[in-house]
Length: 254
Ligand code: BJW
Image (cartoon, rainbow, N blue to C red; front, side):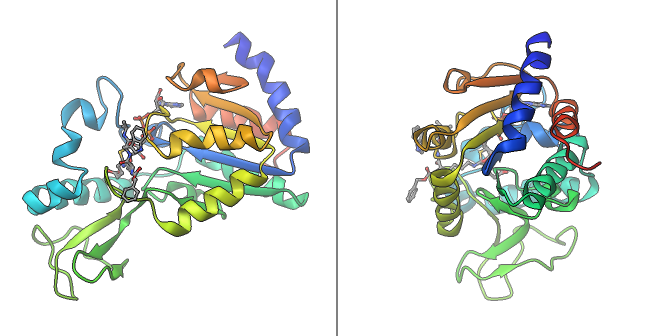
């Protein structure tokens, strides 16, 4: 933590002068809201479930009832959770950046909508959203849904089955999200990866694009990750405390 305290003032100064900030968030940012991560050894989803049986198009084709019930339970849990101090600090940081004319883009891998509920504005959901479901036949999306669904798999009003509008393994990320990410990364001079293990592609490669654009890079995490060596600076600790301290130090209005 002492290295984090030393790095905090350096990162706060970078944040005060950056012209174009890109933040990538992962499940660790929502952990303090009570939402499980994926790869935590004890509580993570993938410590209890096989991702091939829940987070692939093949799993949905094979057992749509099981897959949709699991996602619906997660949807209910996310709706019952509240944004935490980390989400709120990121909203403050965005506000401070935009107030002085700097660009700020939040690329989130999280599907829980907690950033938007905390007040973040420029959010790109690169892995989709668990509160939006789409027809497996027509691709039509639906936001107004029964909570919970009365049966699984839920039928779609347009004929097929409803599936969560999230990105499963083997599926492409939405074009609009990839395009927004590519543009932001080309222009960025300060890049953060927060609460993500950095193992899932293509998001794992975003730090490389940021570095190619000449950005300073900061990893915020409880621990070192497989991607730590790619980052110029690290801030170690829970994202709620670290981001609150950063927002305070960089002058984001409380
Ligand atoms: C805290 C904290 C606290 C905890 N404070 N920190 C190239 C190389 C190798 C493989 C591939 C490759 N390209 C593609 C692949 C395959 C695959 C992939 O990456 N596999 C790897 C796992 C090996 N990628 C894909 O399939 C992607 N698709 C793709 O590339 O398509 C190409 C294509 C093109 C054209 C046509 C067709 C295809 C799609 C990836 C989709 C990932 N989906 C999931 C599920 C989303 C829906 C759902 O929510 O169920 O996304 S998997 C899961 O992992 C979820 C997450 O968004 C993602 C990342 O996880 P995250 O957020 O990093 O969480 P954790 O748990 O891993 O880490 C949490 C971190 O927080 C830890 O580090 C903790 O220490 C930390 N932490 N508490 C601070 N309080």
